[in-house]
Structures are given as C-alpha cells and as structure tokens.
Length: 146
Image (cartoon, rainbow, N blue to C red; front, top):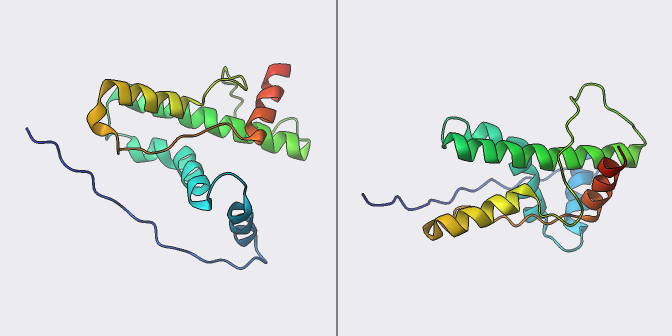
C-alpha cells in the first residue's frame, strides 16, 4: 500500500488594530525575541486545539500522547498567568500539575523525537520543536513550590 503524501494547509493572514487585545497580542508576538510570530502562534494553536483536531483520527496511544502534551503546555501557561497576575488559583479551571522541571523537554518535543525514531518516513509531519521559554521555566518553579 502506497503512503499518502502530506498536503500543506494554510491559515489566511489576519490583521487587527493595536487598540484591541488581539492586536496587542500580535504586536507582542512580532517583537518576541528568539522565535517568529508564526512559530509562537503555531505552538499556541497546537496546544489549544490539538486534542480536538486529533480526536477519532489517530490511534488511542497517539491521542493520549497528544492529550498529555497539550495539558502540560496549557498548564505551564496557566501557571505563568497565575504568577504574572498574582492569582493563586483560577477557580473555573480544574487543577492539574504535571511532573515537570525546568531542565526537561516538553512532552510535545519528546513525542516528536520518539515518533522520528520509530518511523523516519514521517519526518515532515510535524515540524514543531517546543523549547521552554523563560515564562515556562518560571511556571515550573511555581509547581515545585507546591
């Protein structure tokens, strides 16, 4: 059976006024050091929507790996938000504390490396190499204190 070639998809460009929150976020991402706005946006979109995008479309093992990766990345972001805003808890979000440390790679990166080792034909499936940002490292420190 012949393997189906991957097709590319594109998200149309969008423009927002810097007078609203979305515009301010775009402006911040464009000025973020070390990564492009496209990379940062891709990481955020993937963390937020990955589980829904893969539900029913991948094996149970891959789906669970994606769930863990998304939960870890979103938990780190939540911890960063809590630290920056001095909020100890956000009551509408269930508590989840993944076992992470500042020196460990995010689960998404580990999953990608494992997938590359197992099946080198899928090298171009997912070109995301998430590395912890300073905010994520700070968030890990919050988790260690609890």
